Image 1: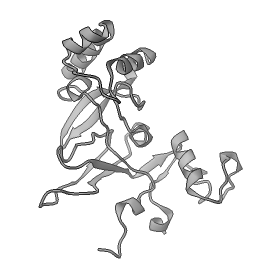
Image 2: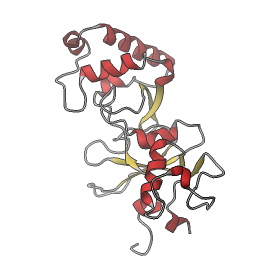
Image 3: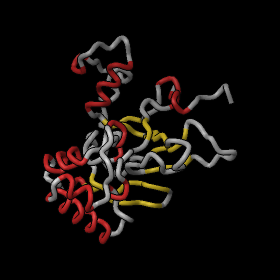
Image 4: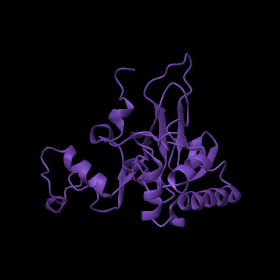
Length: 217
């Protein structure tokens, strides 16, 4: 066991899953079109109400540090409640739901984990390993897979947080910054990268596998 790689040493990038902050409001009941339309209608009403009426109408409770009604309303307004931002999320095993998702923190979702989830929104050909890094129960049943954005508690709700390890990562601003920071020898300018595959891994593709170089070798 100790001679092999831990997951954090296998994958370059990973993150815990999404924290919506208000699941009953931010997520639909299922992945049906009827549920999607219900979510859209609730959001439309939410945008039209003032803060305290919205709090009462949708039973939103007290604001927290990272989820506040004014944050949610601000993001919805700034993004024009765009239909393209309605995405399906893996909420629990075999339980998919609709949500409004942009990847912006402290908005409609308090912690959307955009730097990882963006790699499941580029196309439909990415998959991710789900695993907890700690287990409080006496049995281990904490591994799953996903091909879309994924909730923090997809595996277990009470004792642990699910980590998402995407198979592929795409050339995004977040990844470019990470890869530059990852190597002490590359400097801080993406344009200075050479044709060496390990220095500019996106030379021939817009996506690369998410394995660390040591594990891949």
